[in-house]
Image (cartoon, rainbow, N blue to C red):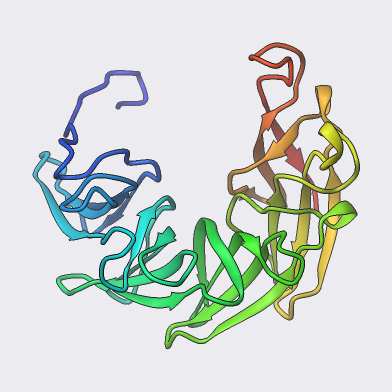
Length: 264
């Protein structure tokens, strides 16, 4: 779509070639790469490439539960580093709860780290810094409220922080954002007792060593509630969205959502 609003359909997904592309695409050398949460050979999601002329190719079909040791249902955008694509899956075929996967351009997909006994259900996009991948899980951890993690490019995982719920925040639904020397992110719940008792969500700061600080707790209503996506850094400010709040309306009168700005 041009910035003037002229839209053109480049490719329509067809089930066996992927379905439900929920995470967007990235540009690597003029070719677009992305994932679909469903579809493919096993209806468990795909990794695909797409030329700007609309030629699509399924590079990998994820295996369903009970299949080979593989992830399934990818829901976050890919990142590319040194000729390798990295991403996460919300599901896993055997004895794990989501995974970080890797696939060299022109090569085969494999799991870099399956979540078994640490976090569970990675959420949001990965970011890369100095030879490691950083992200969040919406479940698992010490209090089963989600984690922030680091995975080395050799597959060693470190839990940087386990969310504790309550004032600490719970269930991070988006990835991390790098600003300065620290990481920043949101939790969709926790931060207080509002929004039905589970809290309306938070914005947090995370140092590289794993020290976490809640910067802001949403209050619901006109203030917004339940942030789920990754934030973007512009200058020294962070911008993000909440799924609810902002006023009344939208089904249960929880509000239709907001766009927010915060200065760390």
